[in-house]
Picture 1 (spheres, rainbow, N blue to C red):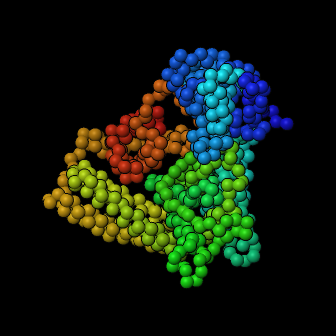
Picture 2: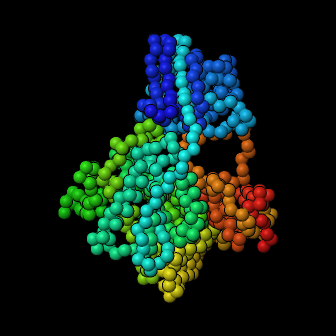
Picture 3: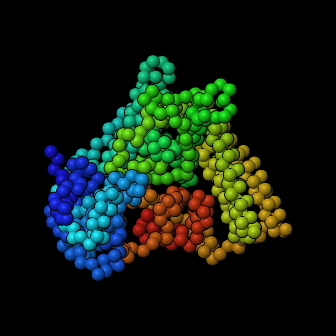
Length: 600
């Protein structure tokens, strides 16, 4: 028997009845809860996340029912107004109307009350259906009495990080990594999030080993490392424990929520590319296999003459015959690839989204599809095989692949730039931002093409790759700039408007952030998972930059770029941003000692 317990009993009206228990649904007991046993009246407080929700209501010593997040409600109800415990039917990440019996994984966390020494009791997460049942009783004017019991335990445990390798053939000391996370903390474990990624990583390792043993594939030049970790913390701990190993890693793939039943979830497999600050070959190598499986595992009207079927089907006898839907997407963090990226290792995420059971009690194996699992295993193995096996010649071919995709993306950026000029009637400010889109796109894509040089490990091949990148920029940027200028002239019936630098622009152009110490853990949007307690009302001020904007500002600060250069790079990724915010951001980081601002 486990040491943890959570039970919610209805005492009145209608006689004693067990409503929900931890034994049946572990998600019901909010993480961060303390032990307690309370029999008390139930009071409904709406969302329960702000003072006005408690106006005219006496919750002291009582149980509170709310629709807000369990952490925010606990901050207010228990720590501020003296309630005994909280019960919420909040389901922020699931589909409470379509799936009324889902229970969301949520935690109390450390809110403003905890930091100020406020009391922590416990919280229960319940389903939308059960929440509506309790609310219905209260709205009928009935006095509802519940017994809420919680028994929780905190204990030390080892961080288990199993790892396995396929040894390289000795021609290279580099490594390629693949991860799947076993759980998000001890309490949260899900079939899709992320037993699915862990299982696919294991299958890639098994199948690859067999293909090598059978002589179908050669042993790769590089060692391939598989990691099964607690999400984010485990990856960070592993790379910190083995820094020499981290230095050998040149690319990584994170598998987080893959192989899902697309009919049930109405979703696609996403390739989350690297952020703009780290444009690497792992993007293109993965993308070509996403596109290959997508093109050969969907019904196309062009195939009618041979059959109403797939050209090269990847199907499992126990799976569906659904099409393979995919999306090539911008970077999103919140999984293990973010930790590799923070260490300078180009990494991408394979992720099915949306997910009808994300972070809920219904994240179970019945949401998986063996056919989709097989397809993502193929994509992962094929991508890793190319990267792990590339020598000088294949490195040049990967640069060629990158250049072809780069041409597609710069064409898209030209379209965006022209639309920006058209929308702004070719005004000076919009024209500047449009030019910035083109300039940043070519700088970024050149970096992506050159990234294959690390796989070449050969001067002649590296020089060939550099020539590809240089020619791409020299010819392409000049042509696209001329096209934009011509269009702006047509719009204005005159030469493009000249942009005059502001005082803030000039200040930012003269400041170069130079890193003095590593960023604090968790900075840059690397945190994962849902169910956080959240800050209390009125806590803290908005920082000048946050989230991915802050992450990329740090990443682009290479000791050479000015603050204005950094602002332009981040703006090309996320849209035009105020330069003053970047100045203040780095001023604050200078005070913490993370950066020093030097005059250019």
